[in-house]
Image (tube, rainbow, N blue to C red; front, side, top):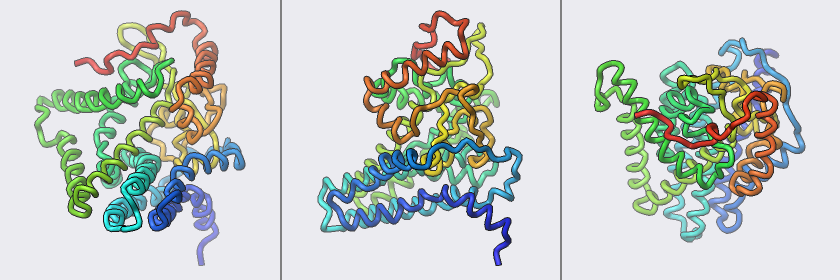
Length: 377
């Protein structure tokens, strides 16, 4: 018989397991083909937008001092996704390259949907795993990132983004009035360069060259090479092409979210190249319940940057006095980000209100709007 306390913990974690329902869904759409292939994108964007409307906001906060022993169902969630994603990705490559009922366009549509899974869920779970102290969890995060050819995200996120968020030295902080279609190519280039530069500088402080085997980029390249090779072994050139389609889609999904998370928010410059400490007000917060289930509380991003070592069930919601609030959850906001005039209409007044609320003493914001080189050479 299950103890009442154990049952209660399992029930509280259960809504966050909703992402696993997308796995049988994508297999069903693969078997049906045609317009059914749109179900996964529709589910992650539109269905969860509707669910957010129906379920409302979650303003409650868990005890941030809850021990890991009480979070086992939450921790298992992110670990279990790794083999599930691996088998789904490569199983579908095997299936799609041999399925006679799928034409070329349907295969592309199918792996666009796979990329929605590996980006919306997989990269998000890797983000949770890379922040943990245990080597096993961090390795699992590396495996997820290798499946989308974005392994350097770990170095960029931990060494650059968290340190320089809200400053011109962070490539991921979207500048005020910078549309997503300008942000995206910039961040692809600058994130890779800044991640490599940060690891090189880290090694230089130990008097080691970048070629030293302790440079995690060797691990990144080896894992990514292994994932590409496996796709080719299973599906040939077609399988490799489908793998690249899902990887590109996943990266696009990640950077859409990155764009939304910090758009127009900057830390105050204190002089001599120094900036104020990171506070909840330097990230957009969203308390929408259903999309936070899907994204394991990623939308409580204000608290994540304030306390990066907190596991996702312990992230705190900050009210409008402490952090700026998004009008909708990420499913709606990422779609809006793809339409720059709509995005500016919705978000620019909110950024200006944020400036008046937190920094009324700053009258010239032009230096904060420039997208300069993120890292010194």
